[in-house]
Image (cartoon, rainbow, N blue to C red):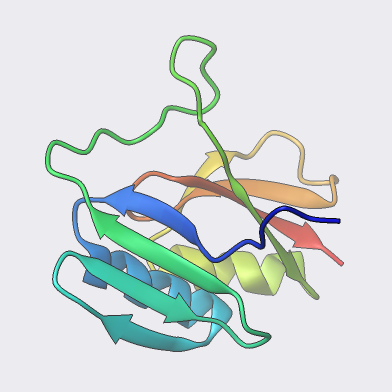
Amino acid sequence: MAIAGLGAVVLDCPDPNALADFYARVLGGTVVEEEDWVDLKLPGGQTLAFQAAPGYVPPKWPSPEHSQQFHLDLTVEDLDAAEKEVLALGAKPLETEDRARTFRVYADPAGHPFCLCAC
């Protein structure tokens, strides 16, 4: 039996509204704003939340000295089409060497790593 259920995944960032908007454009869902906190209510019931963090420093990937701490795997039908769209929204490619793999690595506008993964 589980002790708890996952309520939300929360990302620290300098601008919660801007990052919530980025992920809303990528994942869909509804943005719900509070003072220094923004929830993105996703289709299916999950919540991705964004918290203002003064002095925020983005993770570095790949770097053994500066852990990425976590990343999101986002499944897509077409890697090339999804890549074009996330780059237009402000994502930055973090790894471009092996285009034959079934995933590609990016940073969101606040620097958090995420992968687009072929489903």
